Length: 231
Image (cartoon, rainbow, N blue to C red; front, side, top):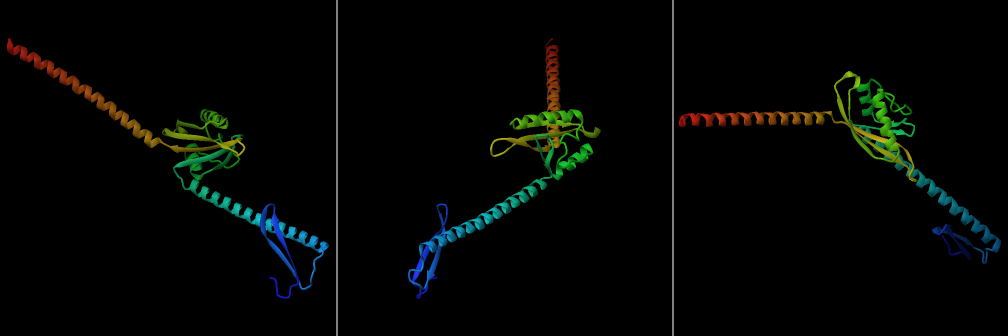
């Protein structure tokens, strides 16, 4: 702060491009204390001080951004891991696992007696026909297509399972496709419910036809009896 004994003062802006960061005030008890050389040195000091302030702000901004990224990643991981009925995994352009959730690995262990980890070939656990099918699906997604399909599998000679599979390209900011993220869920229960409903409808339709036939027979017999009564 300037004091009452100050005879000279110099105020220098602290600039970062067009942004004003503040000012540097220099005071002296001597009149006309600042010559051209000293003003030049003080300007350089102000410039260095501005650079230091911007460096600190940039570093703090970077730390804040990194902390936000870490928080988002933690939230995303928690969201993925807490979705036990949804199998989520991602692959790179070489079809190697980038990431996968626990539910997907549990599914592989139960139905194919195998588990995966990042870096493993994504089609490795599956029998040849399933592996070929997935290879084609990955190829479609890597060409930029969003793919949604349903598949029926018979793993390890167990009962059949029905799966809904969604494959989505991973795009970078410049538009390149670097991999595929896959969401899948077991729809066996709903498929069985659909099949049960269809079978019920078939049985009802068959019963309706039987009743219609019996009604027609009854009508015919009734007409015949009425004719006999007339004669």
